[in-house]
Length: 418
Image: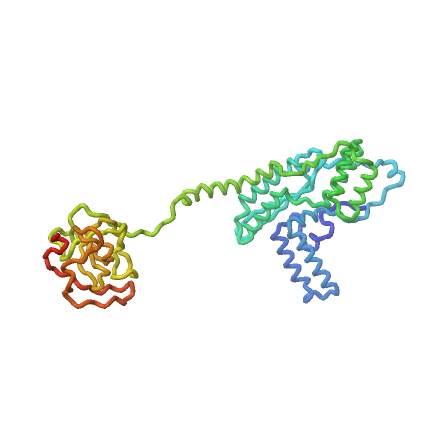
């Protein structure tokens, strides 16, 4: 007969481990056995098979899920011979009852075999502990939340596998743990037989239907479920509701830690996101000064030149006589300028602002003070006092060449005489 054992295939015995060995002990035992039984060193004719067997043992025991499933297997062992036929015939077979929850001990009609994961980080070492058993829905949600909370608090603190193992465990626990179909199909069949023995045919039919849905496509479990459904007959009028459908309170509780972290991040980042992005400083805008013109803040006589006013909405005061030169300031309409020089082509003028800033502006955007209409030529602009300069060919960053100075003749112009 088949009886349950905690080491059905002898994997713990092959590696020389105790049943409660941790992940580090399993790794050390595997390395030691792999070194001893490697085909290059093992003279046995079955060296390859022995080496493959320790590989199978390591892969099964090193993974928490496969290790938990391995603990549920059974192995065939010879049963002790009966003392006598008469004694065994006189002893009635004990009827197996329904399975109870491994946590609370209460009998539930629809238990599930579930495996949760718990990760503990210890600097350079990561411990992955499975939490498995037959649980009711309420205990499963409570244990899943407790395992996830443990991972949130203690799972990250190992390098480099702590964070990825923690995220994997959190995802498994959030989905309700691992529910192996084969084991749960056998568990539900056992529950169906137990409740059928109590006379509850409707509940037994619903449990057998759930067992058939989880059973493999081929195998003894599917055959047993089909035979039970055939024996129970037609489906009863009241259908058994699957209590494991849909997310429960444990699912929403496990979402609280990431939701709290997201809220804290939003509160920290919100003030920073509200700040306007830095903008490049604009050019200074010059308005018409209320005070008399002065050079570099000094009072006294104005330099030689004619006072003009800006007629365009805005004029760029450039560092050289050309549009390709940089703009030193933006001058608004009505601002007074002192024109110092004018180029021979009567296009650009070198002018000074009331703040003492000297630059070049287009002459057609200026108007002499006291003259209405478009720009009128000045009387003292007829003959320049120095030879005209060639148009500048320097780059925009180069210093501008000096222009022809205006005459310092104090005589009033024709416009003034009018």
